[in-house]
Image (cartoon, rainbow, N blue to C red; front, side, top):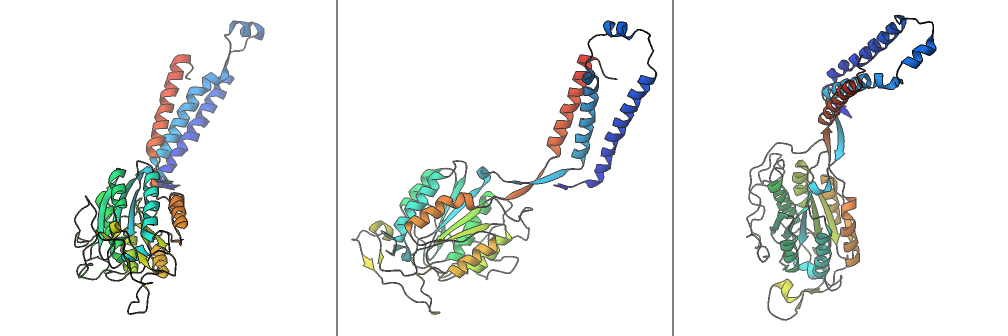
Length: 384
């Protein structure tokens, strides 16, 4: 517990001083009492005595003064934010590699089922948003408590080429900024100088569309802010759950985007999905967004200029994202593991802790004690 105004604590010394004065007065009355030779007659004439009654109003009054004095010091305690005050942004990879069949029937179908169950099982008061990314990051569903558009978007995912993990993190931060005024948008002109100049999605193919979803934008373009939105715990209630099966192929690196999110107190929980030995890619017609048959295309993946297979999870990058933002990295090599990770995620996510001031509660209790002291004194007529 911390005190904002510790200089007010000396006022509490009035409580023991008044208590001492009250005890001194009681002793003085005993000395001045009139002596009577027949105590039996006095006891018979006196009404039944309840000695605690005469002290109860004074005790309540001293308690009220103590509570009001402590409230004046403005004590604060750290408390967890209720889950209903949080929002979750699901950033889901819909790149072509999600058609890999190392997860039955393919990665994307299994992910759709797991994410759908995650959304359905969350408390109805929790806002959930959906960001989709392949060669472009798109806010498919803004954070909402309405599950219907979320489930519809999840059921109608289509794939695209490329994987922009960094842009997905920035787009998720933008989605949080829309509902939390204390979070600055992820501007490409970040005041910390961590972002490159120019649009982060320059030269990138359009994102896959979602029926009823918003039109793709050119990327984060809101002005930056040097204001630190983080509370005493360094985080905001909103979190990002990032599901990807590959490595960043272009645009902002995940590490750079993680620094922008961390500067705004946004925690990212990456999930590395799929095996380390991707096989052939098979997408359904709906997942490809075409009307032809069920095609089989591609082999176990292609190598980038640096020799990296972009169908294999870049675990070092994802672990760095979690470490930078204060989140946690999870590994899911199968559909069952992915389902288990998402089912256990709410319990593993540490809630934000804020400083809560106790002065209003203490002042309220103090006033109740005063009212109680006056009421008992009037009822029992024992106030000294």
